[in-house]
Length: 275
Image (cartoon, rainbow, N blue to C red):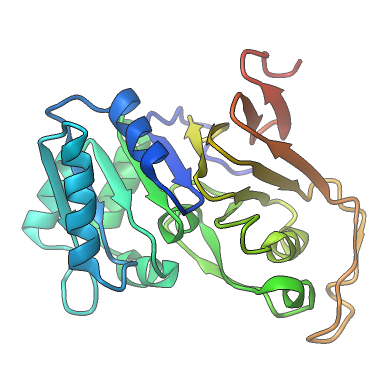
């Protein structure tokens, strides 16, 4: 399984499933920041980027962080300006807002800004964080479409490439609240080397060393593991037909539990790997 495990990753990913993000902001502040830390909020996904950026700037500053800025990258705002590159090189925390994950991927893929983020995630003690769309876009592939029971029909769930901070996982958000089990299950059935991570609202995961996934927040995290799938009819049925999958493994985690991505192992915090 390719999770860049040959190199010890120094950075930390923090992904929230949307909804109330106070728990995420408090976690970033209490565990990963000092008063002088630099926070960059990326508002590319947002429909109202100025309003969103200002709101997060004020929220972080209310927690005592002095150096908080927001950056909007889109068709009218170039990514690779000297100012943006310098700010990304300096940042201790990078935070992606919610909105439309396709915008994040479309406007950051192939940029120097993204390349610096990826390099720093591996070599520096940086935090890459995000909520909703900002969490969904963290992996090398992301789900961007698939609704309710229709997502269990062939072709209804759509995926595309994303930011590639981590590989071979799908991160889906608003998971329990919006009935997204079907689309994550189909994505994993189609790509069984991927692990599905479904985040409920006000609930998230901290991923350390690109492997150790620990839960925080008030709800549940659903893990779908396709490594033991013995049969699926995905390749045999027509578009719009229901899909069968045999032996898709599911775990449900809450705070105090973790999942090891490389070992595909459910754990209580404090248990050793390979128990």
